[in-house]
Image (tube, rainbow, N blue to C red; front, side, top):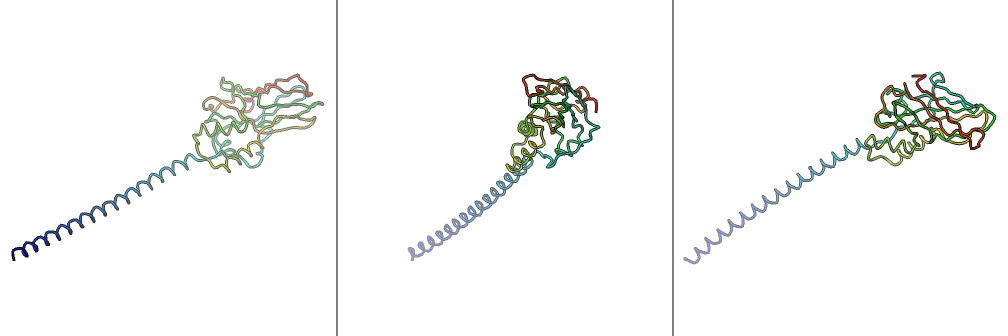
Length: 235
């Protein structure tokens, strides 16, 4: 009898121990599940924030799909040895927003729409990459279309962009930019020339700005013609 009673008491104690162990394991399992769910929500939150940051820094330069129209009355002109230069500086936030959907001067980019007419009897060769502006007491060299886009991305703080949109923007910009080359008599070329200015350009940068068109070659020879065109004639 004593042995049986002892065995009975031992059995009940083991039962309580097993039940307690099961409850403890169940609590730990539930806690681990809550921790995993919390971690999953945390990861989702981090990914969402990263996505928002990436999208805010993911953009491309807007470039018009077709040639913009400008009034000839708004252009400054200079002529020498049968070469006529016409330049219209793009001014104001509204004009830049209409063309590029952004105010480029705040990123150190100045846009000028150029037209070159050959009114002489000989062929003329031009190369805009050698041109520069004297604006706001600073020398502002011309940029190629790719250099202009790269500067825009860098100064705008754009680190991510869609490749297709970037290629389309660069292709459009190349088509709308003034290309160097030969101009036959009675012929003309036109397009944008972009200039780099260190720091944001002041709103009235054009008031003392002069375009320095260097390296124009009349007749295709070695002689070079340097022309100066003040842009403040049409503020």
